[in-house]
Length: 477
Image 1 (cartoon, rainbow, N blue to C red):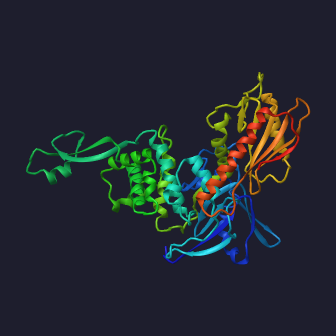
Image 2: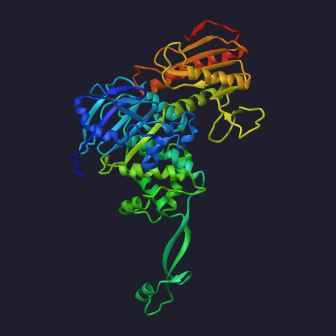
């Protein structure tokens, strides 16, 4: 790959339609390789594509069948339309960065970037995406000297490394059978006749032999070790390796058990991990293997590929928003039913006469009386989408609850709105909006402002427990 080859980076935001200019039309061939294809199809065909949630079935919106983005030709113009997916995805020498629509002060568009210069497009300060990731995935950006150029792909991967490391090592340190060669007096296994004749004549008491034995020092743990050693060489990023005591303990554990590590073996180790890791018990190591490969291959801004394989890291905004709200609502007694591990939820049929029963999982439930639904997509004005309304009404019916509502992000002020009283069994529907701070000077200022807005949201939701059928709109001041 020529070192001066240009990386073309397109920056846009979620839930946005972007019209490509004439100069950008030449890159639609690269983008078309991944456009309009389902996420499930892309993940299966592209082992270096990492997506949250890792198990697509965790998303109630069934994102496996949705595209990351769509390309459509209208009136001789190519329009790129995004949904709830955010993050980075690239193919060949074109990369698409999808930021949250709450990122600040930038303009969408392409920019050519020289690999030799190691520069990245100045784009929006995506404090909101980083904040949700920090809350949900528990990594500390502020203590890691959060820099202005915060949205670099490589930085993102490194920030997420401790998350994958802890999830994998919580299942134990992986070991597998390895073929080892020895030349000593503790003979076991199979004699290596050729090596024995070369090394032990005249006979001095040693025997050359080969044995198959369990070892913690294997291609997968070596891959993790090479990733750790690479991060150690990055002055602005190496603090992730000791951002907390658990991460530091796991880093030391890997280093301790990979004594054969040598930097010259890096490409050999990468090649040995080309096949996606599959194991019936050590299931979390597959995600760790993916991110290690991405970190090692991204070193030196090696974006451009000669094949049609996609690579990158993506986040489902709807899933991330829901998990972020869970960190807030669980503090005031709300349960978060989850489909992936069958926790919580309610059967649709009290008694099923034919076939299997089905189960429904509201986003948040309080004392079986209050049902709240997380909505990351745009909710304009006081309007509620028909399908969204029907969804909450069905939850209210199944739980025999009397209060339902929605929580969505907004760039406007916080809002708590009683939409109205229901017919039939009665009850009420509410809409809550959490204001995402704009025009803040730093990430720390953003954290301070959104924490204040979270407190106002909590107080407004608490009021539901003592609601007296109030029809007035409440502005949270």
